[in-house]
Image (cartoon, rainbow, N blue to C red; front, side, top):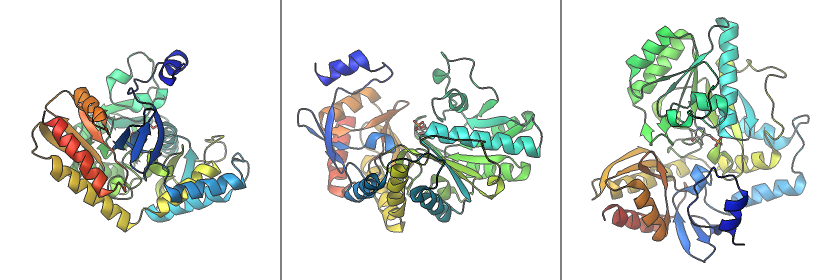
Length: 387
Ligand SMILES: *Cc1c(COP(=O)(O)O)cnc(C)c1O
């Protein structure tokens, strides 16, 4: 049986896959079963930060595989401790809880905010404010946090205690903060899944000020925009704010599952023994890969991200069939004149992999995509968008 048929028969029907079976990859080029090459502007949804099969990343991971693969969190391991140190030193944060995914990292952040607020203000202060169009994960609690009704409809009741405010509408946030007893506010500075919507500077700074004044835990969901993708190490850094908590996953280990909930001074001691746990969280192979990944995210790499971003924005802005280009760094959205799905399928036929986000064409290329490959992919995009 061919792989597509096998998959349809045995894998749960949750994914609408593209009609492509990927069998190998090198850098920003992936190859399908028929030997056709594609330039990959999706990187497994912002995961493969350095593309496929990056040599340095492979070496870090394979070195650790040769030592040992897993111990559980009952024992100390070097990769876990060193990665936590690296994350804190690069961000000024204080402590890290490791898990395996973005949703779990957000679950942990929500637990931290609720425990902090309950101890500081009382048990009524449990509500978490998030934004409309946000995406925070697929567990029942992170779905409740996600401000998109279409994800909620078949799964009621969701975890109570969430309220959603309008994007870039500080008055709405302030009103909801007045009428709810808030534990925390959780935002993506660039909403990825929700349509590549970049939050306004004033709006983010206004939220940060509200959190400071009212001792609300400010949490940034950096699962998609984090780890160099914004052109800054973490997207919040573009806004000059300091969250109390940030969460990340996707690109952190550049291809293996790892989530992190990173805690600042205000909440560093909130979690005590037994307050959270994960069998796989902080897995040594994933942490070794993440140490390698984060260590490479220096100013030169980030300058390269910003350069590539400008190259994409200037190649597409004002072109035929392009209404607008949004986003930050290498998390970009193109609002097409034509149907988004048609554009994406035609790009695929022409050998370029791109993603969607709420009617937009979403680009999430490798942070180090070679400029000639990027230009080749952009030529295809310009052609397809303008048809
Ligand atoms: C993908 C994503 C998540 C969920 O991450 P998983 O690893 O799929 O659980 C959460 N928040 C944001 C912003 C994301 O993009």
